[in-house]
Amino acid sequence: MAELKACIFDMDGVIVNSADFHFHAWKKLADELRIDIDDDFEIHLKGISRVDSLEKILAKGNLVLDNDTKLSLMRNKNEEYLESITGLKQEDLLPGALDFLKECKANGVKIALGSSSKNADIILEKTDIAGYFDEVIDGNKVKFSKPDPEVFLKGAAGMNIAPNEIVVFEDALSGVQAAKSGGFFCVALGNPEELKQADYVIDGLHQINLDKLKSIFNH
Image (tube, rainbow, N blue to C red; front, side, top):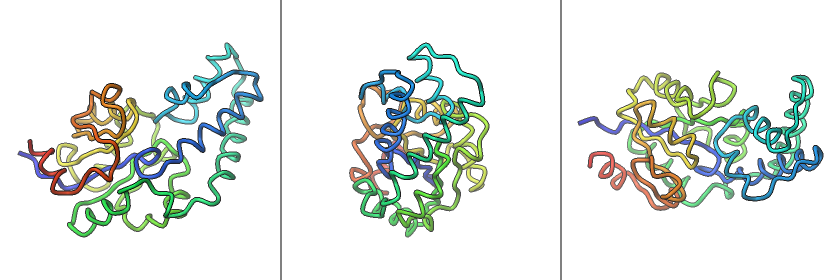
């Protein structure tokens, strides 16, 4: 039986709730393109890359654009997003996130970030938790977005730990699929029906501690 040696965390919706900021920025862009996306559309943008998010919005509006226009739109969206998170601070971390990071660090469990976001470093700095992470793999360091397991496999390789000794925490189906296809144990945060491909589902990190995690992992 493998021993739990590390945790890899997705960022949006797991450690910090920046997903709302992302959706607000995408909604503004969609409105400018006269494409109607409602709150229910947000689930389609969860856990995927900037490029894939834009493509889903364009497909919704049956809109075909050239590459330069797409790049410009993504830049505008990112500027809008960065402006909205200027006031982000440690108090904005999701319940239980900081306590669990501290517990992992204190007990020698390595910690990595595996996020599609290209702004991960900014958010880690703003919330003052960058020092907890042994490895940070974000959208700038991968070729393939989730459900491809590249982001998690790179995190594992960076820590020099095998996937079967790592728990991945995810809140999006694409992330759960990425974790499972990479050979990781996956704890999902959110709706058990939507995330039933995960090994275990909780509401948030406030519902977990190391003892409980080891018990689930070794079950």
